[in-house]
Length: 260
Image (cartoon, rainbow, N blue to C red; front, top):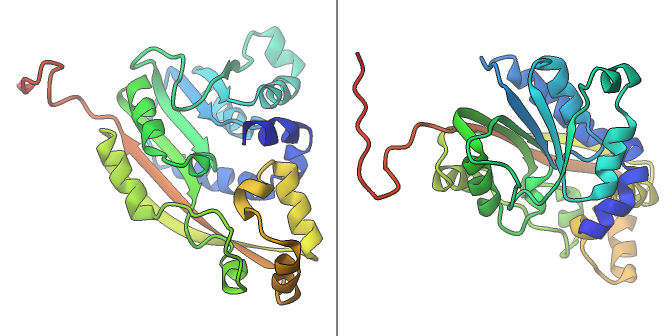
């Protein structure tokens, strides 16, 4: 999907209604977290709404905008205000895959990822890599699509839609990656489209049409869309977790800490 995301850089902002809404709700959840990060990252930043929100909340932190599609990073760069550039406050642009980040271990304090990790066939390696680059006490916060996404089309017979992991499975992945105290919840957000053409255009502009809808014969899509009422529900899975101090040393010995 790298090429699809790269081609969508010019049209992404216009179609990213769901991502902006989810990002706004993710930001509200940060109101409940006490954090004074020195380094923050928007992982899978797309056009940069997330990193701009993080900069607003944590103006003294070093901001990283990370994406595997270079044109998306150029979109982030083009939206940096002139005054911010002159003050040297532009986000640092990092072209990388979330499963192999060019960051030192323990170098991040906050990793934010909005509607990205579900595109991976297996998100666990990404969680493991984010655990590696977060420092002790660091926070990961993210949103992903869940399995009930586009349930209206599934009910109408669409069999090629992408399958997304269940909320509980994602929580298990966080624990397997080494995170502590994962908190998971979900909600449904429903968009209404005037026509199937509008839905298809939005997903194409986002660079995810084929990745989300898959491929079926057009006659099958015509049958499904003929019965469709224009509603498109998206299951949004939210999660956050902390990187706790290690309990085992690299050589396998238990680490015992004494409180004074």
